[in-house]
Image 1 (cartoon, rainbow, N blue to C red):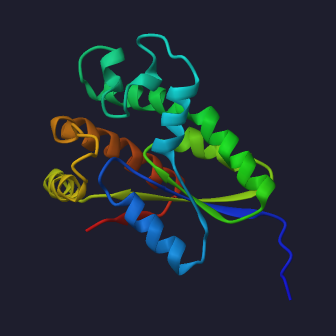
Image 2 (cartoon, rainbow, N blue to C red; image 1 turned 90 degrees about the vertical axis):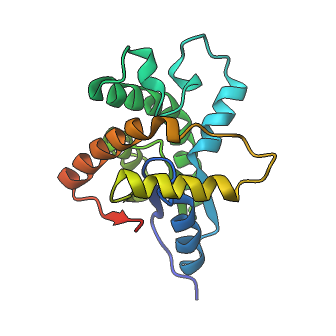
Length: 192
């Protein structure tokens, strides 16, 4: 006998690069028989390919380099660049959320393109229950190790990343996300 439900549940696994979002999402999906995982990096790439972007568009940056649009890499500019970049991805992410709501299946959204204001918008999508989880690393050294491992796992054809060069910016973004998650009582999962 099928159980009727009014809303689908979307689990949001978010955090900075290399904290284990994809791995956690895959394990969670397997354990809970969730068939759909949406990666926000792919959502962003579709936007870049389908919508012509002017030079200097936040969408043409990544979350940990968007501070360049505002000047020097101060904590204020890093957070402003991050939120500006994420806000540029949000309309496409909301379109995905509306589709998930129409389909009525539970799903996982994983990626760095999330913070409090985006969660608020996702929670306004009718027909969805949104359950966020912030993934973090305990320190810069652990993030460095995870970057090393991820780089070693990539195929030779994989795109080279400059995460290590921007580790300070990533840790600044993580501190911002941690503060927000604590204030909002969002579950925080340490990858260590």
